[in-house]
Image: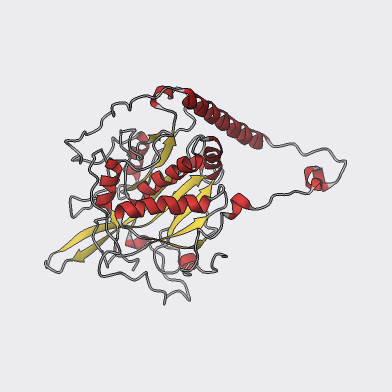
Length: 393
């Protein structure tokens, strides 16, 4: 099935066939391999930048191979005691914010209103083998949108209405897991002791940019989102493919591309040349944009501020994830866990200091599913309020 011409076409199924960039036939014209396209001319030499990129790719592949080899012969070990974990008796910490990094302090100092944080997944060897990690991580993206930042409707777009708001949540989280574990949230609501969430009465629409997708890239995305949906009750709705370029400064409303509503979540398979935050060993980054509105409840005459996530972005290093698929013992599960970790950030989970949880910032290859702490956090993220006022008007 071909993708729709318009993002509004809800019949497009991203699982119908594999990602194009991962499966398209590749060929070349030998004439293109010579200077000026003429036979007999001196061969083209790669630039210094191209040589550096290739060297970096080969180094990542070598490190991954060494790590996987070491893990395949390492004896079984008991799980290490979590550093800074909150334990079974204190499942929910009073404050769910990690200590601020230098980058975050600078961002807060410059952009004091920005509160929604996106984070990067880090894949490293087991705790006993961290001296030579195959992947390292980056720091956070930060964003919040204000009404004054929203663009005016362009000509021809004024009649497009936002996604309809259901009167009740479209789904709900399952029962809490019997086990325990730590979890943290990226941001808290100003009107309640509860995390900022997506509106459960609206579907979370998303588009895919598959420019650098690995084989079966669409399946990795749909499987990861299905895990998040099962744990939260939030509904994800694919609305097409896009050529929108990813980046941390994405506009939350793009009338000429997506109409007058909030832009759908962008899930982009990319590379460090397009997204500098994916340079080196970073496999992915994600975050959501929050919007604050004034609302009145039916049982109260007092207006109050409420905040919800309205759109977001997941940026994935396609080449690194392709290497995980090819090199890891269960490459597909390991690759899916990277996307799933980032999807956890998208809906509001922060990092925790417990390697048995998928939201641990230095995930090891043996943790490929949400832990009990992750699931407890996702449970709360599925219990957010319906906010009809959460529209870009």
